Length: 253
Image (cartoon, rainbow, N blue to C red; front, side, top):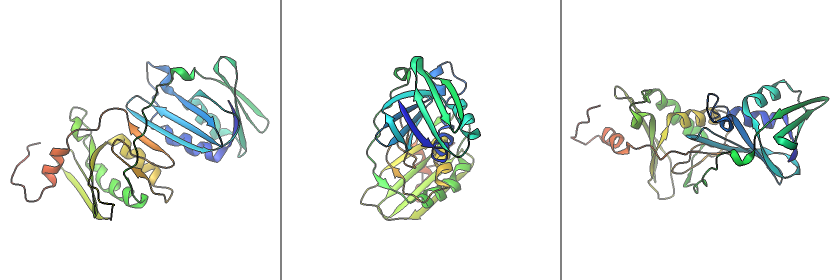
């Protein structure tokens, strides 16, 4: 593997993956990023076995291959480098040679075969304007439960209808629900997303004006697809009870 990439492009992608990389782990490979150089793109993957993210940026690829690099050390190194093109080369025994301007560094990686295989990302169901999705997240995340014992409340429910989009969250004491008008192509799916994936999505949505792809088990977002490796959070029926204004059923939380 041998490629070069602009510092600005690489740093932007590395900062996004830091929310997923596992630092305190008994599985060393989870503290590494998987770099895949192919065509004119560099793809970076991070996972903690619960949350996974894959992002990419433009790169000049001289030799296609893949390798892993320690996430935290690489981020600290890239921040200190000048605004020049950074060159990477995979050496023997999984060492990575990093060159920028007159600076030379070596980082020890691990075998790419040890990196967990991620499932295929599902086909996107709908496109949502980034500004709209960021607004929904900002108005509901404060109500997400922080208690790990209440697993079904550790996220937010998003309901898509042909003419509207709704997001709702609760911790059992307070409830936040936001509904906005937006036309979709004749579909009405709903899904629960974990608090971590929602916050990671919001960090990215706060910047560029793009249209993120949303599908079940898929969240953010950039030229990125993020997914939870655990099953979709259950609890949609509880949220619907709380959202239904005409329901006579009482839910005790």
